[in-house]
Length: 412
Image (cartoon, rainbow, N blue to C red; front, side, top):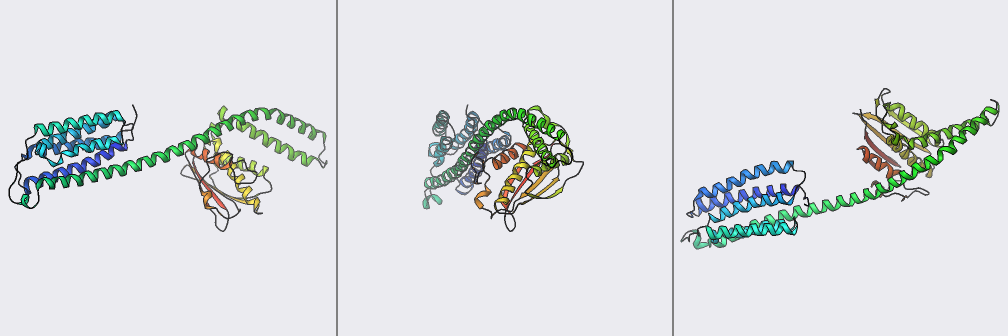
């Protein structure tokens, strides 16, 4: 059975309260103002039963997570039953509010599948037939208000106003719901496409990491051998030391690709130490960029830091470094702090002026506005933040440049 938006029940409860108030006001006017000889007890009994049912329906609407058509039909069946009871005890076939039986049909036509529309139509038809055939006819009045304004026309006017308000309210709700669902479906489609690309990229990265492991190990052995053959005064030794450091950094990066699969990221580490290691490794790979770092991190902040946080930080630092380098300002700012078990960070570049269209985070892989860019940095960063339950935003920095801010929860 097809599920329906749970908000439909909340809309029905609102409309039902409007019906209770309208029915109570109509009964009061008819009996106490127009002095129509009707028995008020059955009428007030029906209105009270509808109000009590709506109290239960409101509690149900706040708890339901999956709404099925059969439950909606059950709610509408109660509405039709009570409406038939009220019409039957207020004039039957002569009651001008008999056309209200069309409203449940109008509501389900745009909210339920065709089969359930047919069920509702049958219920409303039975209710109308029972109320008109079994109910006593409305007595004819002489004098008073009936001479100035025909009572039946007055009832039809009130019926038209009520029907218009109900249809307008429900139509507005339906339009908003459809727009919200269309937006959610579009976001899900974008996210699904992005995640498929990330999965393919991760599979390829794992294969490349496996292939690179052997040549990197060979390079490490060759460099160690060259260092053993050269003395401390050899002018090439300093270059060889730098090469060994860079090769070791590449080896660590290749091993990090396999860390999520092996569960290494779940080890409890000092957060400050782990972040320092990531930043130090980035500074080693980008020595031409000046990093202005401001950190308010407790040195003993111990917890589980996801490996994705390191990847996110490196991607943001690389993007900022590239933007600053293009404008001839090889420096970036990094601000990190821990507040209430959340890692709060900001990366600021000194590139060009902020483009307002860039404030929308990209969700498509391999589309980059950066010359020579792969279109991966911000997309992967956005995906990482979503996976970790954090937030990521882009805004203009003071004077010039862009600031990327993020907030990520740290697991105890």
